Length: 211
Image: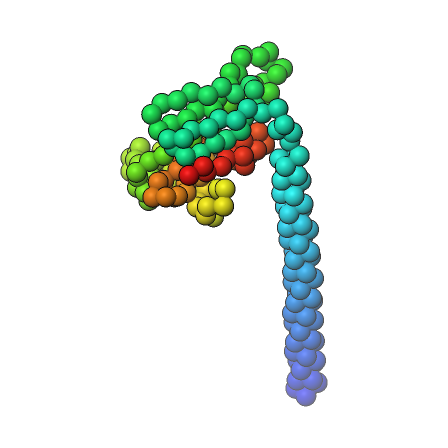
């Protein structure tokens, strides 16, 4: 009886071990399969992002600027092209390119919002360095937390001059302006605009240093 019992116990133990091994193998197979699928999904998503960027760049590059005006400022050392719906305003070391956004009907809210986002680009020079500029931008606090902040910095080239593009946020994390910061001839240039606007990006792409 004891011998038969021992044999039965051994069989059960062997069966349990086999089940555990099969479970582990099945789990490993499932993990590897899902990992491959995740990698495939990531690859597809990356391809879509690259394709989207190429489409966006194509749309910006294909914008017709043949009838745009040219603004030139000898003192600040640059020129830039802009469409006729924009006007130019000067204030010391600041150049404002802006357009009017009239109030539209409720059903045209999307058009209204698009106009508000791209309504102004500011070109300026400053003696303040980039780090101090960021500190000044983030100097508005609420209980120790900055209401405005620079959330990212990326390399950027403005008319062949390397610099940075700083992505800013406004109060409570809402969208803020973006700032191109470059230094040429010991002068710091700042361009404030919305980088996700095709028109704004096209205007910035026409920027040229003239000294």
